[in-house]
Length: 589
Image (cartoon, rainbow, N blue to C red; front, side, top):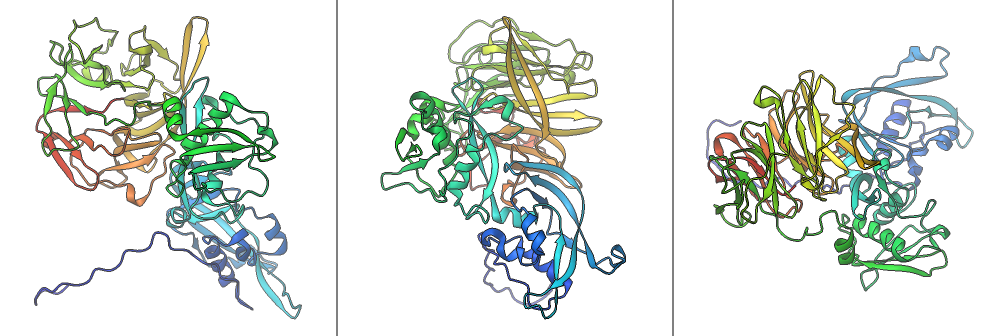
């Protein structure tokens, strides 16, 4: 660095192109084994049709059996190729090259992403000599290799993107997001464009984790008509989707539900502007049509999602307040809500507002009692609908959360009797939620349930670690009593050493406050499958204890930042103070 002299402007370097493409190069004649291994690892990151060039690095047998579509192993960086271990092949029939790295995720054949805490990855590639094509010599080729693709995270995110498939909540008329990964461009194996890949993934059915809680309206065995690799809307913005014979007899409401699944699934793809979908049978006959607006009105998990949501918080007097126009003004005006939780005598510690913004649930200042009341009309305070018996306030009730059907969720953190509760419609008798993982050493610090009511985000502490888990909500009937379970917890932020707060930020996205190992507190977006990207980190903010995000992305995030009070983050700006003193900021849900 210079320590003297004048200051002069310099032209900034251009940012790297996120859509850069890698073109595979075939092995050169008489390439040594190091070049063969390095060339193959590079060729795996390309879009080469059928991975034809990558297969040229393999023996004929290995080229036939290698299935790059079988799985993807994602490492923090491209795999390290170590020097050949000559002792591993004492007969000198070939050479074995160790591959190493830090594994952070896998993607299975159904496109489902599974994250891990970074762990050692150790595999090997074996090369042998075989007769060259002209029969005049020998060439080194790979005869043994790890299954599927092995990619560094940067190459994975360059080649693949996350999209949401949509299925119906079991027995219900609203859809649930199921995130998967597809190729950014044409798929090398199927030759399908991204739209066709996405439709094909939808027809394959839900991922294994979500399958027990959702239904698909497509008949079993339904596929795209053979040979379809491109789907494009016509000049009327209608996307015609040709299906095989399994769908020929479907019509009426089942067909409309199929079309709704397609419309919700395709809306994440900016490359396709489909205002309506037409499903076609095996002979090209029209089965049904459905428009985007109809699908939203009839099948969206939040039916009034077009309106802007209002943020709420608890003020210094422990009353429920609403921020009016928080997305437009530098200092949003504050209004005290009607009813016992706002203008009444109840003193609150935490709150949750229902999706319709007509009712709120509040936990009393002591954390012992849960109340529900109107926030649009004045009324007397109703009796508490749930009480905790824990001795310490921090061991009592968590902050509550509403799903999109008006059911209320809350955790009792009493060490003597930890329990997860659901209150049907916010007014019925509380139902004990079956949670076999909730044992003496596990404690729910906070929870947020999705709008569709099928997934729940849980901040769970166990053995000194505080992690973010996603649970699947399953419902059954047993006589007159509903049976509700939260099962199959999976990590949503395995690279975070500790998690402080979480909020839903759309159908399958979360905003999370936490720390990575050896790092500082950060706020970032994560998918519910645990995947992330370099662009998901939000501007830093010190001392965040809670965060809230709207269902729609156009309204700002809000957070409790301790000394700075309630702050907001308008897209494209930095954090701004809104209210000097307050806590428990929430959006509806």
